[in-house]
Image 1 (cartoon, helix red, strand yellow):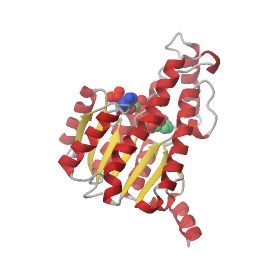
Image 2 (cartoon, helix red, strand yellow):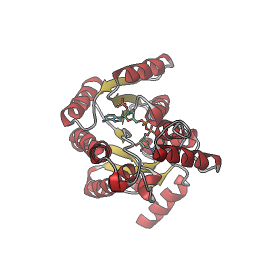
Image 3 (cartoon, helix red, strand yellow):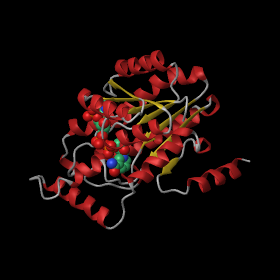
Image 4 (tube, helix red, strand yellow):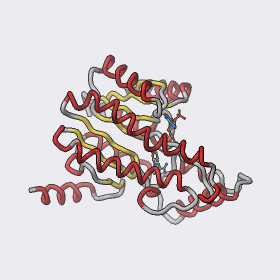
Amino acid sequence: MRDSTVLVTGGGKGLGRAFAEALGKAGARVFITGRDASALEETAEKLNTDGILVEPLCADVVDSGAMKDVVARIMEISGRLDVLVNNAVDPGPVGPTADIDFDAWWRAQQVNVAGPLISAQAALAVMIPAGRGRIINLVSPAGIKRWPYATAYSVSKAALLKLSENLAAELRSTGITVLSYNPGMVDAGLTRAGMRFAGNTDDPWLDRLGRWAIEARDSGAFVPLDTAVDCLVRLASGDADVLSGYVINAEDDLDARISDREAGSR
Ligand SMILES: NC(=O)c1ccc[n+]([C@@H]2O[C@H](COP(=O)([O-])OP(=O)(O)OC[C@H]3O[C@@H](n4cnc5c(N)ncnc54)[C@H](OP(=O)(O)O)[C@@H]3O)[C@@H](O)[C@H]2O)c1
């Protein structure tokens, strides 16, 4: 990833932080965004101390002006933007959809669907003229399977998956690829936070979610963090560009999928 510049939204915490660290270790210059300035500073400081080049830029993904400013700042500092990792997320409200708080539900759509679109538009303004670029949209099993009682998250991730497919088709002749990446359930970020609700909340739906996540972990359904991170780095480095438009799962046999696709397109 030497000479590559990568933007990871929501890169100050959770999986985004692990992605930023691994991309930096692979040689990329990494910019991380989020709303929490102190978390961004703390992450950047820690990683820079470890010799990893990471720079924090505070911005809300639903703020189009702020995301344009982020890209302008990256161009000023680095002169290029090769990869956008749309990682920031709002987990949304949990409970029966029939009486879920609409404003919280809608906020999750804004952050999880409009956010990646706004970030992609800001990035594409420099990627299209450069004739190269890569956009990786973080999806989830929740957007692939049904995920009752967490419909804000589930519906938003399903929508993001379709955004990736359509954008990839529109950008086919531009040198820019778009992938949906499903890291699987990982003991990090929102899944780890969810597990903490089990037995620690008066909200029966959050308690249920926490217990269910713990059951999934204990039954071996989780993906190891290293597996999720290593696959993301491979996608960011361009290994799977031939799969533009598709969903990549962390535990896929990526080499086999690439070979199958290459054989199909010959
Ligand atoms: N953890 C898992 O098991 C898992 C499984 C499948 C998919 N994923 C996907 O992986 C990605 C990362 O998830 P995670 O578990 O690491 O989540 P997380 O720990 O909740 O982190 C969310 C990140 O998004 C940022 N964020 C939230 N709202 C934002 C906004 N409006 N503008 C800018 N940044 C915002 C947060 O930073 P601030 O608070 O500073 O804004 C934080 O850095 C998500 O797309 C998620 O759907 C995770």
